[in-house]
Amino acid sequence: VELTRPVLILAGGAASLNRSEVRSQIAAKLKRVFAGLTGTVISGGTDSGIPGCAGEAAAGLGAERAFTLVGFRPRLLPDDAPIDRRYDRQILSGEDRFTPAQVIHCWETLLDAGFAPNEIRLLGIGGGPIAAFEYRLALALGALVGVVESSGGAADGLLQDVVWTVLPNLLPL
Image (cartoon, rainbow, N blue to C red; front, side):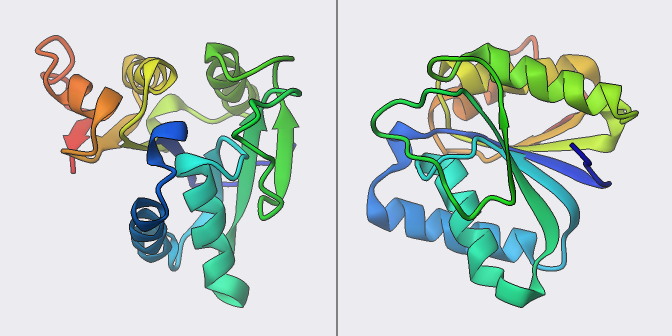
């Protein structure tokens, strides 16, 4: 898999962010974030929650889009998370349901491709236990991690955790 610089990992909630009005707001904001972006954007590869918002935002840019959208996902998906066909590439990682295995596989792929952790940016919005793991792994490796304040779940939990909030590579957004 060819991944190009810069790399942005988009992480966060899936099932908890499926109300249409919330999804539209997030997708519209991501479209602004993605405008003019080059390189690679990595997310979950499904049409659910934050990964689905990434697909919607990328598709909304049309011919103006200058980045590759890559999904790391298990072979078998939960019923509420269909594959998002708006992704350019889907990398299969693990067999059944989302687990920390996709997060680890993503980082292994990036490191094997010669990326240094401090070159990687992660944007986090909400999320559950897997997003919490993803945020902390990225921070521990030295990536720049921005999490959206008041987006709920793992993002808010991280910003309230005194162990992690002292790190200079954590940015509340």
